[in-house]
Image 1 (cartoon, rainbow, N blue to C red):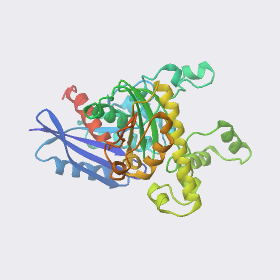
Image 2: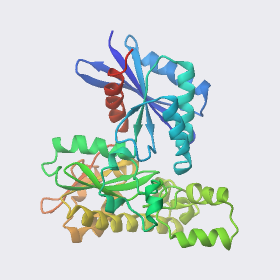
Image 3: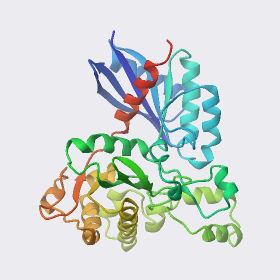
Image 4: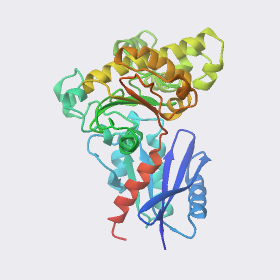
Length: 367
């Protein structure tokens, strides 16, 4: 009987899943779905739906997207009680996702105690960044306690690094990938490996996102704590849930809504988003030593032609030239013939990476 694998991504309000089945030497996606809410009942529903999609294959393992893996996980890991405790300790650094992921793993271990579970970490892709790119200007003792830059969206970047060489001759050169969605970050790669990224110690840093603030002067945080007398919980809510595009516009954190709006505040939110992407692109190109390829991915990156056009216009100084017709139809090849930089719009497929990593770890698990 062939084996099947479930990929689970526990978000802030739902559980997304994907199903992959062995077909010879390949893993083939057979279903994607989503269940609202969290908890054992929802996980039972997910497992039931997964097994329906798998038949007649058997469920061999479950892979989980884990946003924060800390400094000790450069690759996927089998879920154990010790790992769960370690990941729970990192929950304050990714409060929108990590608590739900850990709770889901724990509940799944109780529902199916003999079924291997594999943690696949968003942070792992960036752990090879040069130390100079990971250090903050803080006392060395804090760095020794792993207060470093980590970076996120690593599963998405892994997928781009794996698939880009098949379509782009310069894929192993100097590449910047913009993962633009409700969560947004950017990554510079050289030889398909991360050398710098926009997010840092937590998933708050870098670009403004749907509801997250992005890069912020720590002095402003101190001011909010003192002058506004904000509690840590209130400050966490402000920075994670009430800021970003939603905070700037006062209308929505959804880019589709903002692009369709005529309100000046909506336009300003879009302007800030584009400005920060263009500015981060220059920074990451410097870290990579130049720019050969620019890739847009994620929901906004793949589907928002207007955002791509504006970013590329501001990146003309780097030699970026967009083909307007190709951009309007979402490419995937977007660059004009005279562009010094290749430009692509590619889908994010974190699930494919999770399935592959889960199979590799589970195959080594003594069943």
